Image (cartoon, rainbow, N blue to C red; front, top):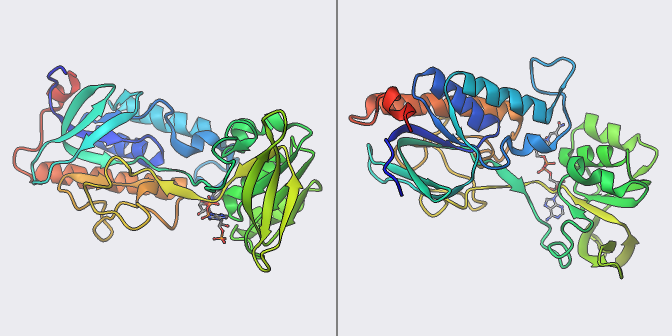
Length: 327
Ligand code: NAP
């Protein structure tokens, strides 16, 4: 491992939180290093139209929005590493040095902003893992076109499930939304939009207990259990789109700082300060509740300011940007 100059701040993650933290720390002349991952841009890369990000009255495509976030951070001097963090070692003492290993190379910094976001929750039923990529998917935007003319189901009752179903209904011959309760969790506007589609129908209250392959080895049917009386039935379907929420991607750090029972990183009050000095967390890794692009971006901004103040107020923590920029 080569010796590299110490950074002021390393940002891990590249959704709205990560790139906003990058923009703000770059504009504060801290020359941030952003570990953006191979698949940069976070979950918005997998969505279509984003209609609720302020400033875009006509809406904007998710990937286009993330490309703009990225370009804006780069314009002010954020340096991007398009690889995944493999290991993170967080210092315990104020002023300590944090270590982030990327592609086998160690990078050190006085401050770290964690913005790794969240990933799609799994059903955890037989057949799900085995049939991933052969009918089981977590992203209609990515995979719906493979199921043109097929029967498909979407599992879940939130806004994501509605969004997936609406997109899928453009390709599949019929779409059933399978939800475990009678009531949808999704917003009124999204539910109404989905249920108005002629080839879409709601099937409740059912849970998926097994995904079953046909002779070809691809998904052919699911076994459903009625949440009320426990009775079971099978349903023919060529595709199962799972949209049951998100789990925080905190696995690299959850043994080093305080997380809650679901793995969300705990922060002090309204700040982004974690239980480790000089370590800040933002976006979906922290947020159970709001989980919007705009709220993630807002918390990325707060993390950048918290990091900036930490570097200013901690003796020896701030390094010269010119030095940091050499790596
Ligand atoms: P969510 O709101 O947490 O909904 C998850 C859904 O999956 C719930 O209906 C839940 O059922 C169900 N579920 C959870 N675990 C399950 C399991 N093991 N088996 C079966 N069903 C399960 O998550 P989301 O839909 O991903 O939305 C996340 C956030 O993003 C929300 O704030 C949402 O508003 C936002 N969002 C907004 C838009 C938009 O406005 N365009 C689009 C996508 C997401 P219960 O209802 O019984 O809990």
